[in-house]
Image 1 (cartoon, helix red, strand yellow):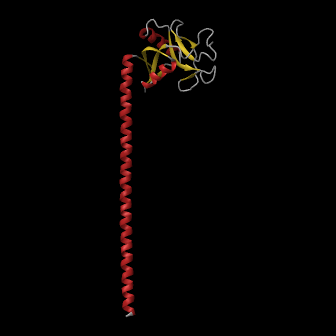
Image 2 (cartoon, one colour; image 1 turned 60 degrees about the vertical axis):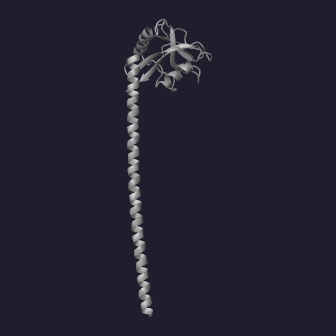
Image 3 (cartoon, one colour; image 1 turned 45 degrees about the vertical axis):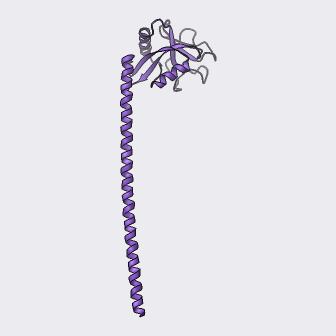
Length: 196
């Protein structure tokens, strides 16, 4: 009897071990299957994100081409003069909302291109905002992104406004020379858009 009990005991243990092993391997198979599904989901998400980036880049390119058609193109920039008078900050915010910034000439050639475009698109306008200021540190002129301006084109005796005049104007009457001005003054402006 003890022998039969032992055999039954061994059979029960064997069945339990078999069940446990089978359950464990099924669990592992499910786990691997879930991992594969997650990996596929991750791959799909990455592909969808990449496609959205490409679509947005195409939309940007189309918008820039429209800007270039309405404005003018110079090297890797498009310029677009906009209607109305605005304070420096309002003008810059308007340019940003359109995907650009206030124009920042960074060479003599660019000064000439901006001056010529300004004469054609803003007839009779003597000056307009540039995307340059020294609001943070007096005398240290930076662009809208805070990058120091290495190319400067100041008019005679400029800048002369001290802490009162922190924004920069492009003067058509002074052949593209710059002067500092009170940022709350209402002026015309030109936006620039970088194109790839």
